[in-house]
Amino acid sequence: MTAALLRSALRRSAAASYMSIRAFASPPGQQRKVAVLGAAGGIGQPLSLLMKLNPMVSHLSLYDIAGTPGVAADVSHVNTRSEVKGYAGEDQLGAALEGSDLVIIPAGVPRKPGMTRDDLFEINAGIVKSLCEAIAKYCPNALVNMISNPVNSTVPIAAEVFKSKGVYDERRLFGVTTLDVVRARTFYAGKANVNASDVDVPVIGGHAGITILPLFSQATPSANLSADEITALTKRTQDGGTEVVEAKAGKGSATLSMAYAGALFADACLKGLNGVPNVVECSFVQSTVTELPFFASKVKLGKNGVEEVLGFGPLSDYEKQGLEALKTELKSSIEKGVKWHANSKNPKINSVYEPIKPTFRPLSPHLPIYKPQTSSTVSITNRVSAIILTTVPLSYAFLTLKVGPMCLANESVYQAMYYSSKLGPIALQVTAIATVYHLVHGLHDLYEMFRP
Ligand SMILES: NC(=O)c1ccc[n+]([C@@H]2O[C@H](COP(=O)([O-])OP(=O)(O)OC[C@H]3O[C@@H](n4cnc5c(N)ncnc54)[C@H](O)[C@@H]3O)[C@@H](O)[C@H]2O)c1
Image 1: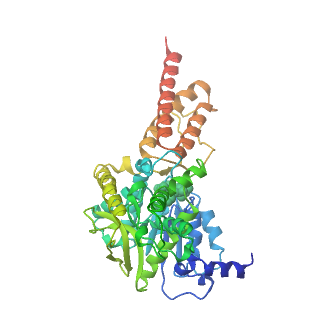
Image 2 (image 1 turned 90 degrees about the vertical axis):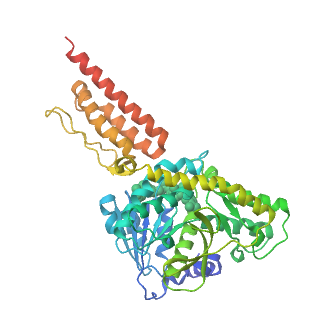
């Protein structure tokens, strides 16, 4: 497809109404810095590209624990207005954030088949906490678009972090639920036999399972769908994420449609910041439209973020039931986030996914320092890294006493650490146990060597 054809196709698409594709035209005057945290990930990469196409962005800051120099170099070659910079590792996080108007957070681990969004809680809670602490320090006035799951808990965690740092402004914190809206529009269009780009469907509640409540009774253009069709559409919208997780069969969750949805929502935020009137999108925000402290509904965006949280209007009986049914789960997810933050007083335990570059120093000065060659950076929870950092060097010392510097056992421990850090909490625990096992073995070997 030629560039002209591609542009005209895009112009006709729904995206055109939200993300101006005058990306190649002369820049609007306002300077807007957007930071993407987790930019090297499945969502982060296409989202970074889409933000590079947004003409409102003047500076695009791409941060991840690793891999961002490559993503930034790649994206920077696209001939649009913004200047792109890549930042890798925690020591560059401040520079990545400084001066940002909008921070988008798709950092964290995604679901695998059989997992719920809540299964991601422990790891992603720590990631979100440490990133929000940095936002509070380096760009406290930025709007924050939270994509990391479980959004129903990560948004309350972010709020608690900002409160604890004295910078919380409820108008600036958003849980990104746009993908639910995008899915509801697409699925409805298929059933109602209308153009998906002409459809509007508000989606309220939260962003997980039954907490996602699409209001098909308010969908436009209206269509005469049966109760069974509405039930099926509602269920499909609620399970849309799982549909993708299962189809990807272990290779992650929605990334491309999420990047599109994230870019759509970021575009709306930027328009609001720039004073464009009547910008309305659904989002999970601090709210009083129900008794719950956070709730997703239509939100009017303005120069300071949320200008007005809009109510959800009249509901059908089916939607009223859905609303009542979702409240218990949503309330407990919100409380879980708040409680987790309250219990996370020890920053060493809960700031997770800190990159470490291990150098294993043996106890004996005659042995070489052990530097694993497999990867330059490992990301694991601090809780586990604390165990590994204390036990692995010791176990290395013991094992090297016995088998010499070519210590294969430690290489395998290191490999296990690295891969388990990619696989999730259960594997991390197995690795920790394996590491302790090596230490005990090392002690036993030592005892055997010096036994009279
Ligand atoms: N809100 C939504 O609708 C929605 C939809 C899909 C996925 N998600 C969530 O988005 C998140 C990312 O999904 P993905 O598929 O891109 O995952 P991914 O694993 O492909 O990418 C995540 C990226 O985050 C990075 N990262 C990890 N810890 C970090 C830290 N401390 N600082 C900066 N970056 C860090 C990783 O290095 C990786 O590049 C997951 O939590 C997923 O559940 C949300």
